[in-house]
Image 1 (cartoon, one colour):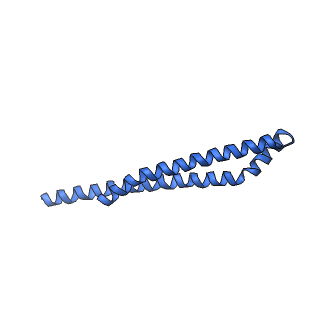
Image 2 (cartoon, rainbow, N blue to C red):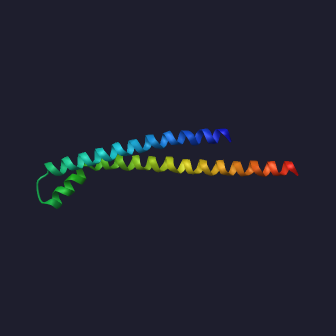
Image 3 (cartoon, helix red, strand yellow):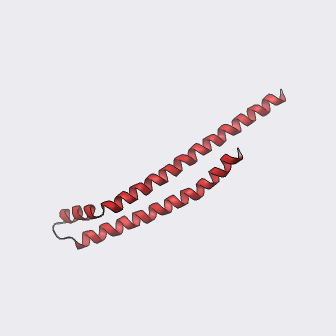
Length: 99
């Protein structure tokens, strides 16, 4: 049980790090896309397409960072469920011992 609690606490730091990485990736995407749009020639639609094309790598990095955040959140939920299950089992064992 203590191991689960300790791992859950580590999840808080992991989530912060993942969210920070996501924020940096989103900032990078916005910067790359804006610079590409401003330096492109053509109609607005053409400039948008060029900007999206030039920022594809930054968009991929952002999407991967978002997946990392989602993974950490999922792991935290699983750990919380395991802690609750262990607490329930512990209470059942205590109740049986009293009988």
